[in-house]
Length: 375
Image (cartoon, rainbow, N blue to C red; front, side, top):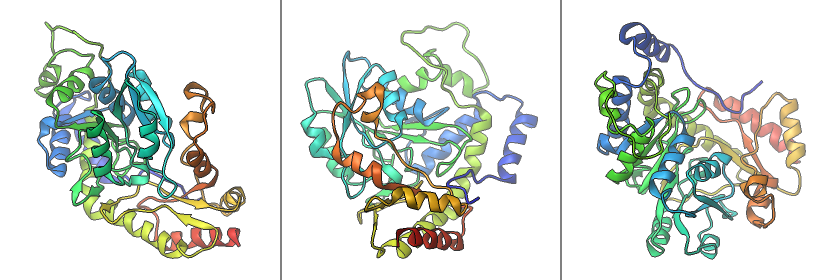
């Protein structure tokens, strides 16, 4: 079976975990987490104080939304409907209201014109989702936010290591949230982080991941605990462990020379093989972006998606469907309102295998079966 996605880990990650287990001996949040945050900050070119690691990408989105808008009763956040449910659940968990917006047919990213129609006096933030690693037109997103006095919380779960106009995603963001789960561009096994230049948001997130025990991060990083402390806000047990950070540090070291080139080369092979095939449409990337793709979705036209999916699965090739639009889910409206482009893409999108353990021959095999199914 050719896997749709998988973790690419090995002896270096195992050695790092063994070091934490046998040499450090402290498995919770400590110096290894601090070093991982420093490594991420160095990679992005930002101060270490701008990076707050947590135990999942969803936790990152939750704390970001809570810290940016959650104190405002009834605050609304504009989100493209075509995203994993984590984006919507995180905003809802923060006490805000996720507002589903339609997407652009060419790339599945937030349609700002549709978002503008959904603005109300309660709208406090916009959450662009970098679908498949594509940050899209971030200048337009930030101009939209500036025009309407909104915070920007980038759901960059797919986009670690991606660039916009020569700058890494997260290095210039209002707030950006990354995921480091098992199949992302780098993994900690599970994990994520918030990156923000807003010191107030960073400090709120830093405390909130440790049950809002004030300044507990400083104690943890020095191998101590807070005993006489105060708590002023709701907090959560969202901190990253030293084990997770140890894996992440090794993965980060492999990213630029191994993972990023592999993902980009495999995606380019797909584009070369499929760009001229009638019945298949590729999602667009603009020239301002450097995409390290987390997934590779394509559009299967003319109602042939299910047949193509079945044939690929029969040949031992896993495929996916990213994602069911959130406005169709019961909790977020159950389809009471139509978002026609998101729904159209949902009926066409098929995600093909993509991870650094694949070879160009694997991609050729996938394309051969897919083209056969279309014809």
